[in-house]
Amino acid sequence: MKHGSILSILFLLFAFTPLFAQEINVSTAKWNRIESDDKDFSVAFPPNALIDAEDRQYGQKLRIVAFQNGVELEIRIIKDPTAKDRLQNIQPANGGKVSTYKFGDFSILQSESISPLKKFDGTFWILKKNTLYNLKITAPTGQELEVLRFLYSVKLQDKPLFVQKEKIDYPEEKIDVGALKTSPEISEAFNRKIEKSKINVTYEVASEDLNNAQIPGMTRKVVIVDRPYPDLGASFRNGVNGKFSVKLKINFRANGQIGDIAVLSVENKDFSKACVEAARKIRFVPAQINGKNADSVEIVDYTVQIFSFPGTFIRR
Image 1 (cartoon, rainbow, N blue to C red):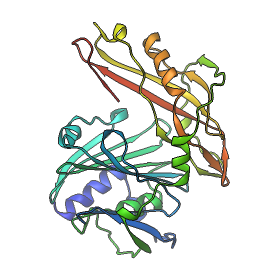
Image 2: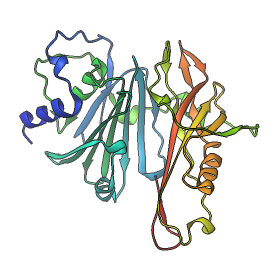
Image 3: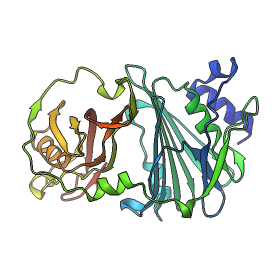
Image 4: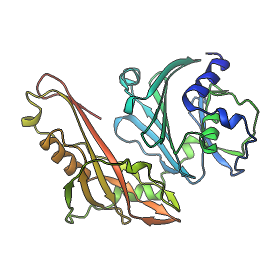
């Protein structure tokens, strides 16, 4: 795809027009740039990011999560022989707008959605052979300068995915992807012993999108590092088919333990109970306010697709 067409997509899906109409004052903070082993993919991220450089389930090779000025940025690299099928089966949440296109040897799925309270979610799935590069952006509006800088940093086969109208040389330091080490906070979250304390479970009506809340002084949002799937027994799966979803309002405590849980939607009581039990075992890095660990509340969705034949289901 020609750069002009790519720029049109940038304007359409990410509504950056106001940014090009003003003088851009971008922070001079140095970001870190990593590139894939074959040098065909590279991206930059803020230096305060949390890094998980260990091999994880479902082919994850690397995950980087950053939070800066209310903007969440995530990079995930997944290697899987079924990567092409995975890309074709991805469905964006919340009825988001979707665009698919080619860029050199890469196939790209790009989605964008805006919540009722105008929170912006943008996602890129970038495929080359058996490797998926997943880039995710969550921001108050999608027009923040951190969003712009992140997207302009993406290079595929040494060409920028999006072309700047006016060239800006952002300060960067290149880091070998093999030199990345797992952040101590991530290791601590995986190794933390889960306390068997009493957790109150209530049932409420979902009246607001808590994940949109802007907390003064927040320097890091909760980072979930391991979210077990609900344990659905054969008695639930057999003879049942369809899609089951539930929203849980979870208290993530400053000490890394799960607090009280509120069930915000109940389609099936057995499914809801199984999701609550799974949520008790979530491992996470606590949020921070002014650089110190703090309690926080987040909405977590659980969705399971069960096929019509007994005993088989897809978890999401």
